[in-house]
Length: 91
Image 1: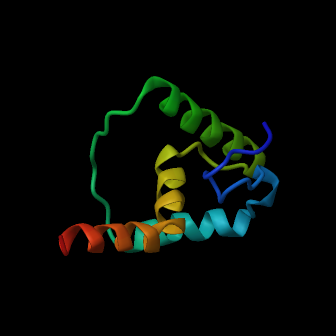
Image 2: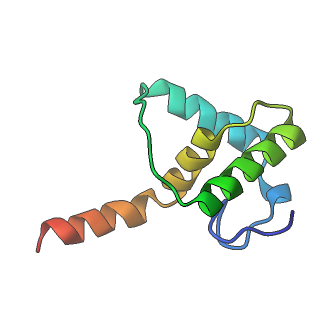
């Protein structure tokens, strides 16, 4: 499937994602409780997330999880998001 910019880091290939890291992201998600929500995404964005989830599930022998991919993406960019939020609140 190649490289996906911004997914597991800018220009990271799927082969660089370790099984341990994926498990850690899932464990971290479970430790702080859950919120169930629905989000509206463009169809092509949803299809990309879904394809990636199935690819990683097949590669690592886990269940496909778009939620886990979104958690990982947010965790990778948490500082940027919090900085952006802080800038918005001061104006």
